[in-house]
Image (cartoon, rainbow, N blue to C red; front, side, top):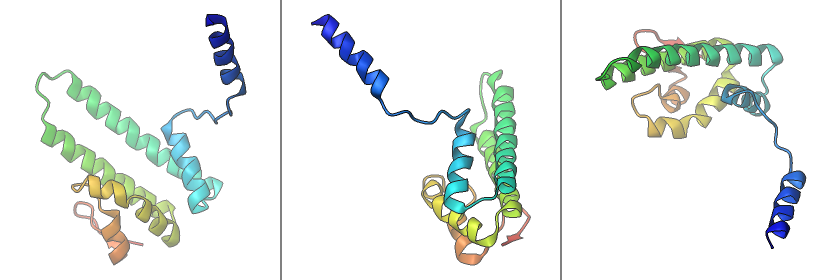
Length: 138
């Protein structure tokens, strides 16, 4: 019985449909954006750099906070919001109006869950958003 179960598990692994392997979630997100938004290769490369820069900055922030016994959650939230705003500004520079609208719509669920972050739904309705002191029109 054990041999039969083992054989079935081996066959299941061998014949399972292959899923693409991505280096990280950034690659997956960019590929998804490329397909859904029709990004050019140049845009996809720029978006990947924007996401990597943000991930690097967040990793540094968390590494800096790691050594402290008490982490100021409000400070972490402020920095995270600032990183989100910087990312949104950078994306607005790379994506065209239609792509930005589609991306904004895709982010609406995230915005409902994270009310204190950049609200792409409001940006879609008004055609602009105001991260911090800067106002961006698209």
